[in-house]
Length: 430
Ligand code: ASP
Image (cartoon, rainbow, N blue to C red):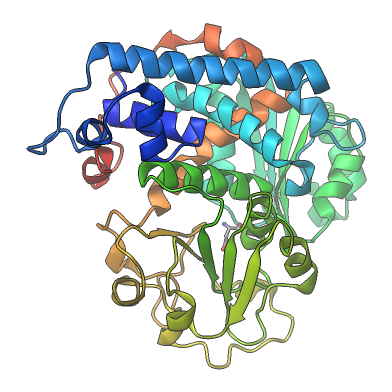
């Protein structure tokens, strides 16, 4: 299945970090022509891009990636060594990344897209076994890490919950980690205590990935969130530098926003508006970290006020399971992100994200479902990006990213052209 011209062009703009105007100039075409190539395929004004332009764009992107790779490798060695902690190839925190290294990881994620889009298969991790150890509830993170490892040719063994693990018999983190290391080649760990995954990592030399440690961090989620933001912004012809980001909900216990604000702070001149119910504000040490690179931080309890002029809204669930005596006073409908308030307060090109799960129960006031068929809602595209980004994390930590490109073969089955019923609407949108 060939990649749609809109997807190819949008990917190219994002990878080259160019706005539409600059991209049109870079490939030597009129902005108007580029706009018609980016229109949804079925629409009246949409035009097919000349084949020669497609080849030129592909060549520019490949050359740019090669140049960056040579420059980075020549100066500093492979990515996995640059993000290592104590010389170990592990992913515990987004603090391990710089803007350059995070964008290098995204180049690897881009390479994974033909596999994630089910056009190609690869077996670069054939024979490797992943231990997926989840001591806390999970759907997306556990399954997408497992699927990402399998799509690279590896296999997965998992254990879920305390009750069915030897931790219920009093086994220590050290013993569990050391024993598992004799069985598997990499581990993804989720655990309810902050700092616990670092403890697992200290007891082993195999790659360990933090799948969420209490209210601490969720680095792979923040990486796929950032990848999604960059992808969506390039579709809209925007740059992340200088953008207005609104984070809304439980910012005290939400580990995804803890990791994401640090990653976003690697960019320049952002405005962060942090909207939370009283008592669930973003921790002070994170505010301090994000207060660099010319960023402006505003905090409010008023969602309507906070949403004005947003380029991206990141809603989060209230993490009641982590409450230590807090009550949710005053957390009412006014905190709910939904169609009405987004229509009233934001421009039509805003994007709405959420790490999921959203609490759809009555009275939860989490992100509402009335935006489900609305192109501004990016949550399912965001969740889909979990696969290429997590594949990239494994490929880098296990040192096989250089083998992926040449290992790809065509898939043998016929995948659906759009994964979800609403995706046809998004497929060619611009
Ligand atoms: N799935 C995310 C996490 O594990 C967000 C959430 O649970 O609200 O942190």
